[in-house]
Image (cartoon, rainbow, N blue to C red; front, side, top):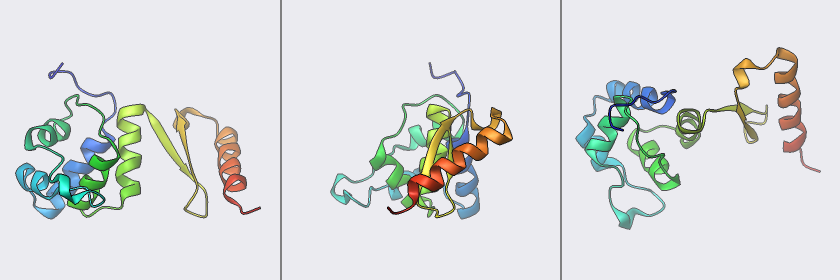
Length: 131
């Protein structure tokens, strides 16, 4: 399975781009990738897994702690890393409400008509409003 490529590469592309921006190696990111909510676990990514991810190889979908650790290591907002992982591993697109706190995860959002996209944004807006 190591020779297969992922159909979407949202997280892989984000990781590669950010590593280039920060001038970080796979080894250094692996060292820095510690879940801020569970620092006692130590590094939760290996150099090899990061390299496979960045090279668009198929890897197991990372869990919440791994995403927090990756966001921390790459100095990125957690939401951005979560959205990229949802796209790559679950083929989900994120639709944000204007309040920037409410989001919908939608399959094939880009293939929806403009009217259907607006309906989803309206749902997100309505859901996010306090009652």
